[in-house]
Image (cartoon, rainbow, N blue to C red):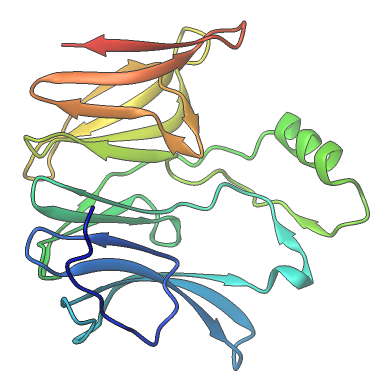
Length: 219
């Protein structure tokens, strides 16, 4: 717990993640006054915060003009010595970078957009009331979230429901970014997908109808 090094920087970081090569992956909030929009920018820099390079950016309108009601998908993961970035504004596409920020491949899949459910609109209106201006998208994002394992496989949680309550279809890609299969899984996605895949096992949290949470392990 002893302090080893302290470095000052002049930028505001939304979040920061250390990489194995002594560089950092971070997210910065940006205000674009000219186009009246905001952005979250995913960037990489060295150990003294120099050589900053943008890997991805998600742009959205000023929320003071009204709120777009949707689970905005702008996510990133670090696993198997690679950086993965997903941005719903590109559709079903996940970018894969090495730890130096070099683009290695684009992982894509064709999908059929699902309409934004009417019952979900009703829940948002009940939550925020009618005094706040709300904008509902026509369709849901292409997927909900994703995670990977130590063999480089990618698991993408779609909005397509399975046969059982709480079950969703997951698209699975191999380490080369090639789609290999779909799997029905029940995994709690409460702001963050509650799942980890290590050494051939999948550890995930499920929530029962009673609200009780349980840890489940798949092989």
